[in-house]
Length: 416
Image 1 (tube, rainbow, N blue to C red):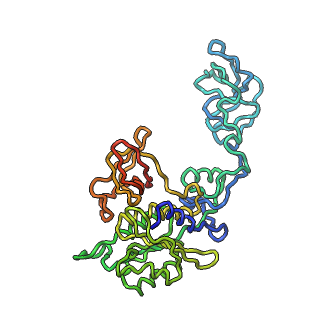
Image 2: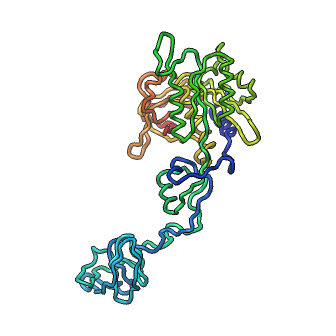
Image 3: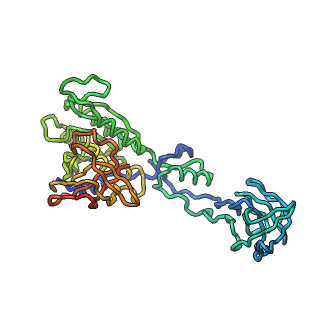
């Protein structure tokens, strides 16, 4: 039985990174939202594009107004008005000013902006009542934020609203991104029915397939659901064969324990899969199978045989599958692994130390300190009811019997 850390290392080593040519596609700007950037982005434009005003006020020459006060104001002749989007037509000479608005292009000859609250206007003249603190005051200089030709966005960046804004500003309307990871998900078990079917004695509603689909879809994965596969070896073999031929990653739940109807591991081996993980010292989630399929020299499929119990399936997915998907999606290496924080426990936590134990609950930041509150009720791998609003998993190490007292700190895996 592998430790959690060893299993994580194996999974990340098996998960292939995207290939730079085969796995890259170019999409329109808005279609890039949520995707992973596949190539460096630079721009031929400076930003700001030109010197412009950061305030509504008056563009002036600093030398003309550096010594003025409200008792000794300096009077300047207004020669032009410059709203945003207007190209100045005149050059400022000594003792002249231009009325300028936020975003307006600085006129030639001007080097400073005086905000309108520190002026008094009389007809075509403006009185400067307060000396600017320095030249270039309230001027956003061309290229101050970004110089053309410099790196703008790096490969591996997740494109969200801020990145879309940057790409739009750089006039990058066609964006190179990695293709979406393809996943096949199915559940195994004669006892399972879909949520649409009538529940009868002995049957269970399949929740795993829906939970895992939602989790991966949120990460931008293209998901294909095969439904419920019965505990018949020939049917299960056909389903697994199809899945590994079509997908980058396969998630099945159930059939990976040691029961008479648990066929998954044997089928994986028969189909040419190399099994790297058979069980992990994690609670919940011990019966985890991870296998690798090589279809050709550049194409691989990673198979996760997850436990059937709903909480076990999700914990294994959060702990092992999510980091693999991040790597396969093209994210930067610094973003692959799970994110842990130290949080103050609001309740007593206990484990027997035989396996690394994950306690689900709510993680909140209060006055700058993370706090963890375990879910009320039974922490049982079959009890998915109290998973609602789970945002963190407290980690109790596989060592001697572990106690975390109220108010003590515990390591918590953040669930986004």
